[in-house]
Image (cartoon, rainbow, N blue to C red; front, side, top):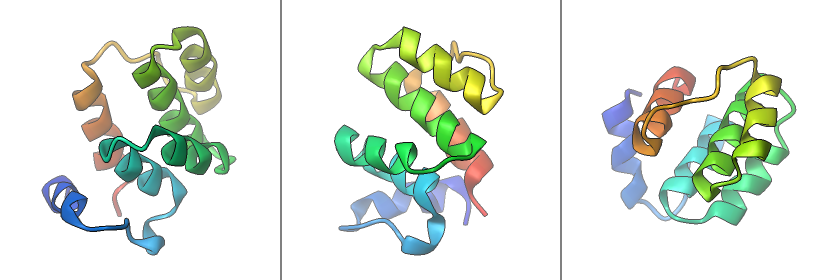
Length: 95
């Protein structure tokens, strides 16, 4: 699946289970459901979950917390527009 196909799924009622928690979290974030997205990202112990977690805290404006999660993800703190960062994360995580 490519980024455009992933974006097209935003018209669906739920994300696909086989995507895993980080992609599902991004999907929920795009739906405006920050809490559900955060729960999924927080439940993913690896660097992909930490990267999405960082994005979510940046989205909410908590830059200190976001910085912590970028470090956990071994990623630089993003300076990109939020939409561009969302796309970059999704593109990298898509199978």
